[in-house]
Image 1: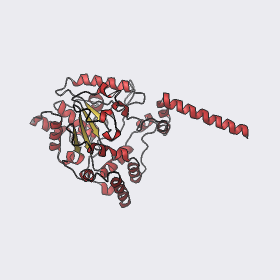
Image 2: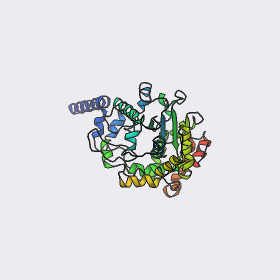
Image 3: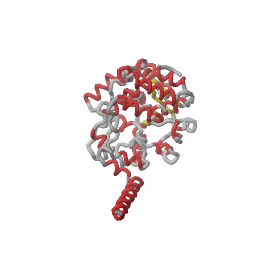
Image 4: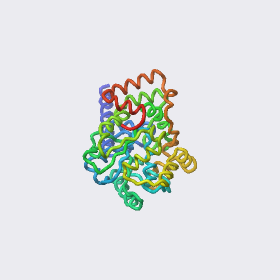
Length: 355
């Protein structure tokens, strides 16, 4: 019995050491484990989600890929990030939308991995290549995708240290975020989950979605709080999802003014038409689901779909059908607790308009 116990203890130690070594030197191996590989990935200290990398905003890397005049589009979860990326691209390209994958071809994706072994250095070089291509556009400055915020104390997200970089932020009614998040997570393709060790696992119910939002307040609520605290900086602009939906022309004019892009009547009409949900949805339905997104896959692989229905409905409201009274009470209590000293932010998120 003693021998058995000692052998078992040794095996546990060997496994623990092996897991630790993999986690430190080759963590992407974990993501090859079907369905649950993201769990050892996470417990060995790797970033979650596994395809977001905040290290690119460190002093070590940020100045290697970001330049004065750039725009960082820091989208809140399910707050119209892809939509606004398209608007900005149309404004900067004089209305041209001849692309197959908007994100992969034109936007800076330094923060975002499209396959597990895609190192920081690879992503920085890809952003530099896109910058050279962007110089051929009427407005050459780069736009970069991000889901980060100043609340994470990152060098590249310190807006005061980078006054020549513009930070455009999309935010949304938090109940609408939860409702949209449910559909978004569950629409990830099997191929995407297989590539990322089963992440993200689907939600079994709206209740589970709301619990996730409450248990991940720093990600869901912290993003809004962090940007609200710096909203009055000259290089920061907040855009409310409801404004994009109900007042698209006004929203486009605000975005163009913030980015210092002159807009003719013709460009405005083109941007309004090509950024409408009807137009974007038609392209997705008739071309492929990721036309406004990312080309997923390793170099040389056939691309696969990440999110089956990325351009969904863009609907405002609909939360009464999603939330039960108990869910609503619990969610509102979590918001009040986390954002209690920001009643002005809560009010703005629940409505729309300027601040």
